Length: 80
Image (cartoon, rainbow, N blue to C red; front, side, top):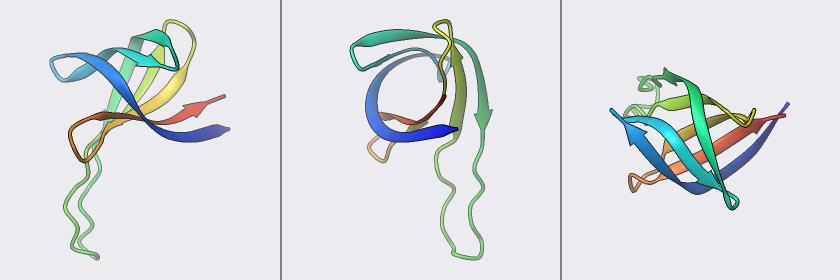
């Protein structure tokens, strides 16, 4: 089960990939991260949206991070 948050977070990256992020007063170290590109919708003529980063942390969290419209990072969802 997942919970949708869509909260802005602080993220440190290496070569564009998240390696550490700060959420709810705690720093999380990313141990595994897979990039999922999102395709443009031809049907709706929309441009491609920023990729989703499916991450696992050293603390045991599984989550999805993405870039917001202003280039800021967003915690999309967390798996229980």
